[in-house]
Image: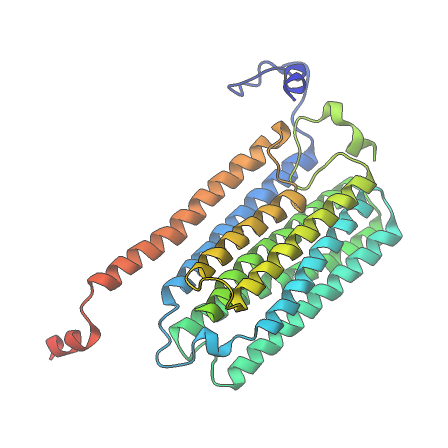
Length: 212
Length: 128
């Protein structure tokens, strides 16, 4: 590791002078990946605001139902399984993209898409069931915060599925060009980051909600 | 392909990058999936069980969640502590700082306000 750093020029203050004449700017895909990573982090900061609102409003049920009375952990377990598996299969699609294997890429993306749609279907049924039982977002501050937080994650998954289908079409039509690869790198990061958010959602909202 | 394996010209890694064979990469994702499933199953088990001391359950769930986020970061997003990944880790550290400030700060301030506020029935009487 140290030897590698020395070979590239030891540059503790990041002046860039040690590398002068040896290396140009970082390749475009690295800049793109880094930029998208910054976007993902800002997205996580946005989610942290929703989590803070949810945690503050947790007790404000206005005489309505609490989380423990509403949540069905079996549903949540199935949703979690769908998202975890889809993240894994998305990883397989990244590998297929890197070795330029069209068939496996399309298969893995299709499976990822089906798992994501299964997640969305279960979540949509849960929401409509809650609204039908009179526990919609307007019932209490707690439920408003719940629908905002979980619904925002659901919206991200929906956007991710649209992006996924776009990537399938683009790879099908244009092949594994460098720009398409960069877009796919960003998509894979987005999809894995959604999983991280979901881990926080099922732990904080559902598990803590039904344990308390 | 050539771009992927051309390590000598690469200054650093984008998040999600790794330079190894397909077999090793599949294995990496499998390990990540295994760990994630294990942690998820544990937290669902802990949430529903009577076997452990009840007040420890929320703490256990939070710790398991943080561990699982770490697993996802390392095995799926490939954010590692390698020298090539410094920029990504620094950005992550800053993101975490903001997340903790927002969540911790909100909870702290709101709990303090709640604590200092008069009970609602007394407040209503004063307004009459």
